[in-house]
Image (cartoon, rainbow over all chains, first blue to last red; front, side, top):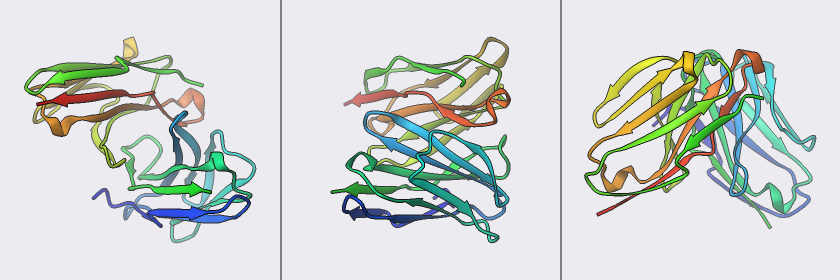
Length: 112
Length: 110
């Protein structure tokens, strides 16, 4: 157990819908990362937050947004879902951006 | 952004064999980690190794930061070692984004 908790583990939803994925980082970790893993594109960095503020942004679609709350948990919001958004979404946390990162078990999103 | 290349892309081993996986990166990094993604999709930390050498049981890793590569050694492989091995790096020149390589898919057969 990495100490990073992601909910839900599985999610099935229809095209056009909106979902929210939640991540609770390890105790004491200030940095949260979100990743998307699809079959054809590997692990893609989406966005990083550090102590509530956006720190780095990757190839995150405009339909996707994220935030980190004062209690340091983070949410990734995916809207206007398309079939191609089906993927495994990972959250990771670390004390800071240059220390070891630990990954949650992921949320498997299926858009039908 | 920084380029992270892993080789070989695929590897099939007989149980008990040894192997070396390589990760090359195109710029200086301040963070390098090796992960194992098991068949259930879980990403398991193996090593945090921005430089130097570490060992953990049958696994060891070496990063030569000045030459921009890292190696993961697996000795006496077991079927439970099967899965995909990823190298991931964080580069200060690239806004400290954490980039993953494309992985090495390892299959260990009994």
